[in-house]
Length: 303
Image (cartoon, rainbow, N blue to C red; front, side):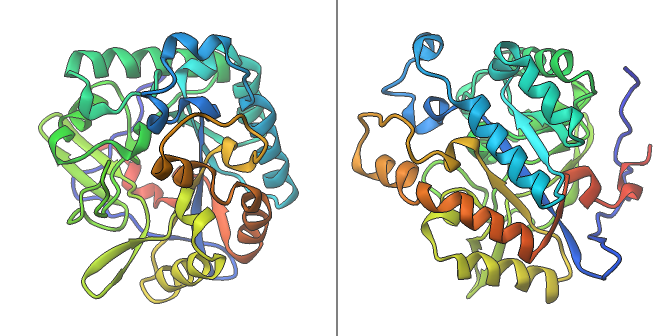
């Protein structure tokens, strides 16, 4: 595979406009199974993953069908563990015209890894995903947005391993992730190893605080009106794209329940029955495409 283009040092990232003038946002899906979420690490060991009922293929196919009906293309950040066991699923994603990117291999919080462990993880994932999809992988999202202030070194490793963009920083306060003062919109980061495009989790800024509007549990548990208002505000007033994210398991209210604490139970299970209808509504209300299609291609030229 050819060497991917590096972001230019002076590159700017702009919103891509549809013919109607509407901002094109990024639709992203983190392809992992219901038992692989980071909050379940204490109750589901990785040694059990292969013996648990897998629902990732059927749930991802449901997402693919929903997107196909709305003529939406997105970016699927695939877990390497999933790609290795379900290569036909990854091939279907690519064959349907979606961008295929990396979500790491073992869904481990990167701030708990050493640089060597992180490098091994993303190499294994990249190999598994590219073998399954037959396309080059240039984008990465860390499990649970776990690129935080103490793990910014991961960006240098990503650059060294040939990744062009990262989508792992959420500019909010959260008990498990976030860099609150990080830029809110796509931008180029200069690192010791070179440059990388950062595509952060999306927020609105109110009263000097960044508030999440980009998907996941925020989409399931807050009123739909909040997400719609937030995306419209960023698109219309700031003229910037939003990066939305979801998981296949979020469209599966019948998934097996894990014995977890109250906070994790509410975060993971509350609102699952609403996700599919809300997602169908969202792709009607706004324009979406893949991450690379959302970004200004001029930002991907070789420096």
